[in-house]
Length: 149
Image (cartoon, rainbow, N blue to C red; front, side, top):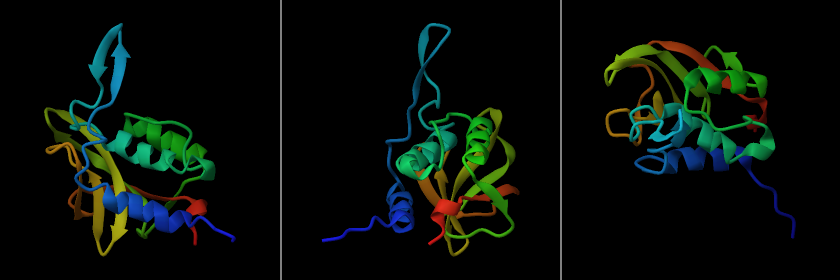
């Protein structure tokens, strides 16, 4: 029996089934010797959410490591072969403009899942949610060649 792993289909399924999961809500780190939730119970979890899913498919070179900041995630993505595209397509990563939320200005990332919808870690609830992909200005849409069918 010959089995072929279907990366793209599995990748989309993982993103879709992540909605509502609290698994991405907390990322612990040590800051100046003190244990701290780096993502503040999911308020700042978008980069951790996206990088965690990308790392599940590490053998395809989607990224090198997990991130809690958008800038580091985008740098890792570019170094791992992601490139900007002009129109979103299923599975692309969307980078939204910096907006003020929860008392600070932050960039935001999530996945494009088709039909003008995205899934991103919602800073208010702290869990991934489905939403329209354009409530904020889009800074960039990224694609990786390993996701080509």
